[in-house]
Length: 122
Image (cartoon, rainbow, N blue to C red; front, side, top):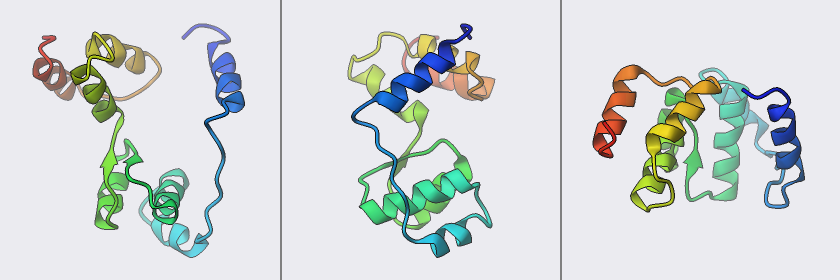
């Protein structure tokens, strides 16, 4: 990672007009979800329910399973990248996955290979 890059990115995110912080109302549901999930995943699920979100972006497998059990549609980062590739919005999913892996995004080599094969980049 480039020195100082994450600080610059954080400022861009903080100042982005299309991003806003939302607070959940149902603390009891959040608390019950934290028995199985981290606080972040729990809050994301509660907020998605409260806002009637059409889709929840979450990479945590357990979180996605619980979200689906609660009636939410989910996708993850890889799902977003696959859609972008198929819609021609990115040229190479491999390049994007490699960038993610450099930042600490965990992806098994088996899944990495399957994704690249599926999009014809292997």
